[in-house]
Image (tube, rainbow, N blue to C red; front, side, top):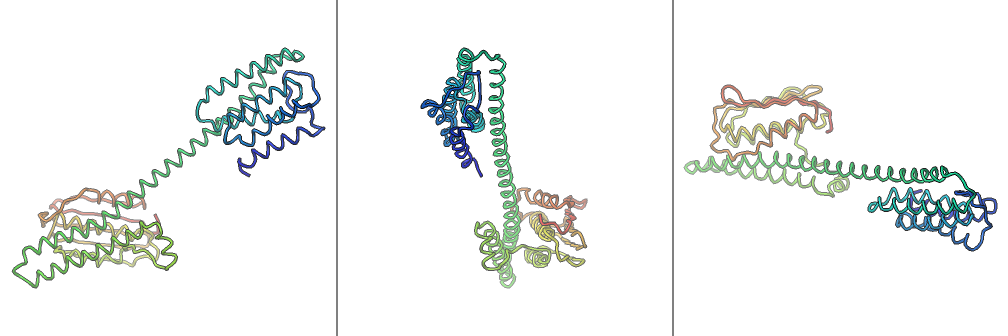
Length: 378
């Protein structure tokens, strides 16, 4: 039962219980004013103490003001009704829900309490002042509990906002990595192939092969981008469930196609694959694919024509990847880069608990090494 239900329930409970004969004069007693039989003013005081709880969540300050007036009348007239118990509930609610003018509310309520206490002290049987102080501290405790609830609610809202922002940032970073991996590789291959085609006008057969390679690469780029855009579609999960199709996820088994595409772009690549891929590798095969893809893209950009080696080893619990160039090529056809690729690869491998390095070699080449634990679904 939520607050929207139990606030009205409490208000009605106080209202009904206050008119039960056995509970007459059994409520809060402050100032020891002699008990008085219920009359028309008693009914008004009980209504002021009980009914405002029906709208306490929506108008907490108004509720507290009305309940306080009813409580003052209840005590000064000596009714001591059961409905007086609504006062700490109204205070707790104001403490938990009031956003503005909190200090002014505390001062106004405290001032009103002092005035009522003075009137009760003069009208009552001379109870010690410590009783008024004790009652005020009890009311302050109710207010403090409300403030604590409010602070917890605000802290939880801030935590959820922060988690949402971090999740959004992580998702944007993941999408940026995927776009970088897909677009950069294919576009780099197309630029290199088109650059080479400019020098083949005297050899129609080779020119036709070069242009065909550009066309094939462009089609691959479009296909990969379509799959990536499908993943960004909010209805992607429903479409998969309805049609029983899985999104395309490049895997280590497609490395030969990747290598062949790079060879068609004019990069001599020696490819070696050892071992048998495990039945369940989680994200490891995708990360291995992206590492080879990025390394070959960099080879095309910065070491075009350089002899390049790709070695992939499948173990029972990990995949190791090594991609290196010998530094004999050139970067004349390079369209440039942003430096995000290697950083993204390192992040991917770190998430899976592996090792990644990308270091220049003495002969001018470059070597990328990665050890990727298999079986993680991250």
